[in-house]
Structure formats: C-alpha cells, structure tokens
Image (cartoon, rainbow, N blue to C red):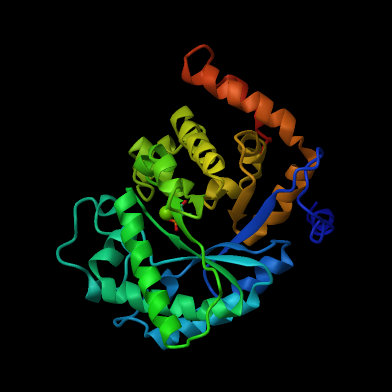
Length: 326
Ligand code: PEP
Ligand code: MG
C-alpha cells in the first residue's frame, strides 16, 4: 500500500468535488524540510523551535537562531509557519535553567507565550532572528498557548517593534510576515471571534486543546484512556474556531496529532477544515483519504450531526460512520 501511496506524492490533495485541501508537515529540525517535501507536503505548517533551546545550559544567540531559521526557510519550497518558543510543561529545558521551584501543575503554569512575555529579551532575540530569516522564503510566525487577546496583542507589538527597528537598520526581510495564534486553550477557541480580528491565521493545536478541555494531563499514563479527540466538546471547539476564522476571512489550520490521523480526516473535512499539518509520514495517507472524499457532502452531514449530538438528540454513535477504520 505504501508503494501505491507514493504515487500520490506529486498529485494535488483535491477532493472528489474539487476542493483543494492543503497538507503540510510538522517538523523539528531544519533537516526535516527535505523529508517533508519527499512525502508530498506542500510546505511546513509547524516548525517547532524548542530543539534549539533544549539539552543545553545557555540560550542560543540571535546569530545561531538566524542560521537555523534561514536554513529551514530556504529549504522549504512553499509556505512555512514557525512557532515561537513553546517551552515549559511537556517541553522542559535543561533543569539548570528552570524558573524557580517546580510548579505543581506545569501545564497550567509559565509556559510558551507566557514565558516569552515574562522574558521579553529572550523573546525579542528569537523574533529578530525570525524576521531576518523571513527574507529567505514565505514565512509566518505563530504564537503558542494564547489564552486571551491581550497576550496576542502584546506579543504582536513586540514583533512589530522589532520589525520597525530592523527595517530602520536596512536589514532585509520579507514584505509581509503574518502573525497568527495557536488555538489550543479552550478559552481561545471560545474567544476565537475576538482574536480573529487581530490574528492573520489560526492553527488548532489539538494535543493541548484536548488536554485542557478534558482536564487530562497529556503526559500522565493513568488518565490517557480519557484522551478523546471525538469528545463532542472538543469537536464543538474545533468547529467554533473554524467558523470564527471563516467569518473573519483568515485561514484556519490544524497542527495537532489529530490532523495526521487518517481516521479523522473525513470528520475534519466535514467540520470545514481545509489545512492540515502533520508528521511527514502521514501526509500521503491523509492525501489519499482527501482524494476519495466529497467535501460538500461531508460538510452537510457533520454540522447537523454535531448539533444533534450536542443537544442530546442522538448519541455519538453516528460519528463512527464518518471515521475511517484504523
Ligand atoms: C498541539 O498542542 O496540538 C501542538 C501541535 O503543539 P505541541 O504538541 O507541540 O504542544
Ligand atoms: Mg501545544
């Protein structure tokens, strides 16, 4: 089957009824850009920058970061979404650089954008490196763990100020570097219409969205039996985010693991998702599901079904029909 899938590498992710779906890759190292392309991804929907900061005592300099970002942006033949630092909780740095005592609930603590806003010098260094690297391709900047509009605006202001400073110094940059928000905290999904007025794009991080919606620690084996992408509340938050993005005219992607699981592809198409970012090894399989699907028909079915499930009119069983057998 794998051999047959590779024939799809250069084919478009176009549904039976002619909807063009975007399939991108999640990567962690600049070298992964080539793997993404070899697997038929049209670009990178999530480049995680944490690896530069992990397993070391110091922080990478602006130059070191610029080198890595410029390398990855140049290597991607297509759009690339780079996520600003998402340290903390499940992505701890070397213990030598921890911030005070270990919190009881690291997932609810100082992580990701919260840490960056608390340490603006660290954030600015990364932002400058990113903006400089934008000269080499089609980059957008994504902010993780946004939980309210103020955080988004504060981070965007730092990025805009850095851009103005670099421009005044004559540093080459892309004309436009869109700034978007990850939607991975339930509050952000509920407040998505508000955030959509300021963000240029959304990307739904289902790994954290599920963790926070269902109150289950994503790294605690004792409770992972409760980790359920199909929980109607999770689906409802995904739908609200997609609809808020549509209403505001901004793109909505999904970069959590749910986006790369071919069992959920039809359901997500039915919820209105048009951009999926996933581990490179999943792209071809998801592409084959997209090409077998009729997006219009799925959209017609899923919206009404979710409403009936949420209202208690029906159980969740009819969802099974939308899933692809594992
Ligand atoms: C997510 O939370 O879904 C996500 C893509 O980010 P990470 O897994 O890196 O937290
Ligand atoms: Mg996350």
